Length: 258
Image 1 (cartoon, one colour):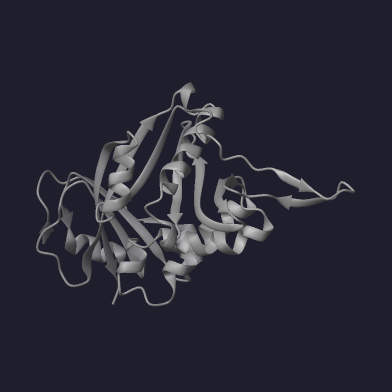
Image 2 (image 1 turned 90 degrees about the horizontal axis):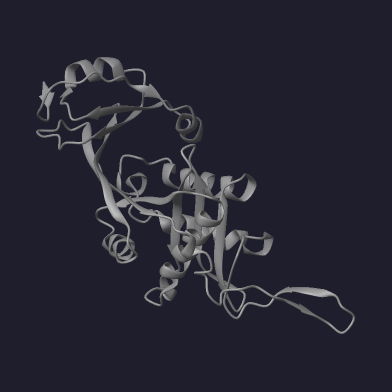
């Protein structure tokens, strides 16, 4: 059985070590490119896995029950320019002192700061919100907390390692967050972006994106990229209004063993 159309291309199911460790079972991925999927061959190779992600540039058709489309992944990119530095505008943090000179902490009228200790709980909660359209949340076959494990791990990585993370704070409440990493090619990539439900439609997403643009430019990056879901219409609209251009569309499927 072949799913899809076009010339067959070689592919290999690659074991994903990090995902396997995070979920507690074997996870792999197959990159199809523009070729169809030889389903019988695929199933034979996939027996060692519980879950396999399949990424295809074309739509697969006549899917068997154990293979489902779970996402249409859109990658957008924007070139970075020196003029982006300073886009945060008035979002600057300050400190307040008592008469003896003791620092009490940040005085946030509105500020963008790293997720320091007092903001870390809210940062992780927003990380979960950022995946509202995630395939790990919408695929009902994933029933052992995969979505929560994955997004908690991503948030923890930002807090403990070298990814750049920022929170938008107003009156000591965290209303939004963004995380940013740099690829080996020098391209900065947004990993997570979220705004609290009761603070949306106030321009906070744009402010956080401006922070990412300025941070990427200051670090010498050449471009800023982001991947989102086609179904996430609000995110798609925001990115395109901010000048991001679509560079890739990928169909994503999950094969589940049993």
